[in-house]
Image (cartoon, rainbow, N blue to C red; front, side, top):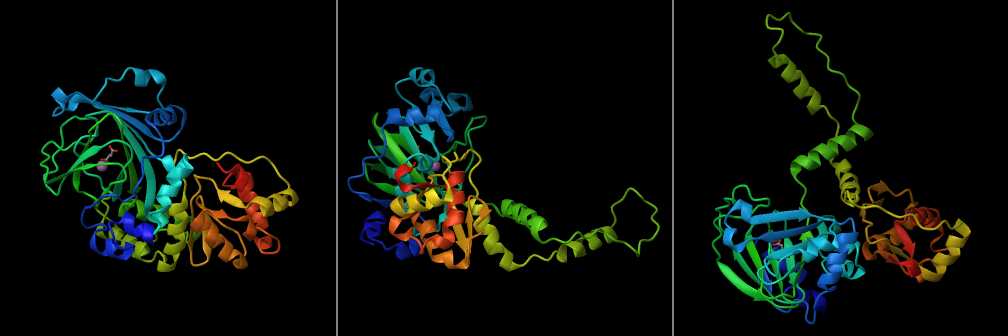
Length: 387
Ligand code: SIN
Ligand code: CO
């Protein structure tokens, strides 16, 4: 709790949520005292060259920053030449999904576990030399912007003028008017709710910012995905019927009767609120498109049982596990595990590991075949081999 209090400017998570979450910005000086970052710019650039996580290089010409052609965006993966060709200033490298690569970034994310995992997106890390940044913009999601090494000047505005620079390759506000401004130093953090205009500019050549970002699915996307899930599970195979059909003069017209019949059909779709919990747990546990799991070396169930009792297991950094009222989902798949495994599954889902003490027979016996499968798929690892 003490840690959470520092993290949130002396507020408890409940106070922070009531007053700021999704409502207003909060500057938190010394949110993480002593935090200087998790990696250096060279390592970040190496990850942007070698990994599948989404990376972007954004560069601008200060003399043409108000014009679309003054900005350039390139998507990774990159190679060394992409970096050697960069000017000394006015560019930035942004790498998403760092919690899938660095255990320390996953640990950073877990400091925010007073917010449901289903709402957490990822940790993005940026590096920028002096003057670098992505320009003034709004994001549709909540974000905590934690300063690692170096300094960044943040300007924010609650403006409603959201006009964009035409033809720019990224969404940059053309009429940004700063209302508040701060220079963030290592360990300082700025919380922004969705749609607050902001502009961060590197103040020196060391500037690294850690964005703890959230996700908020669009109603449209949820509706489509939910109906698709229902189609597979529970929607009846009903066909359109029209026994009352009258002869028509305008055969090309879709008529009002047809609209009424289909409206009635849609109203009869038998989805229930009870289906939403498992749907959401499955949906939010689905891996991002770029995620690939590497299967672990084959190990018989007997050998696995011995090894797990010695070492315990840890989740792969890319694994997502959620639950709804005793139903568990891992990486978009339902967990076929017995009810008596629920308390162990809860620990695994929340702590992302099961210590060896919990992996002894008979405590772990009911979970072993499932855990073994997860191990073979690469969703979990023996703790000694933690990725
Ligand atoms: C950054 O440049 O690190 C932050 C990007 C943002 O403003 O969302
Ligand atoms: Co932003």
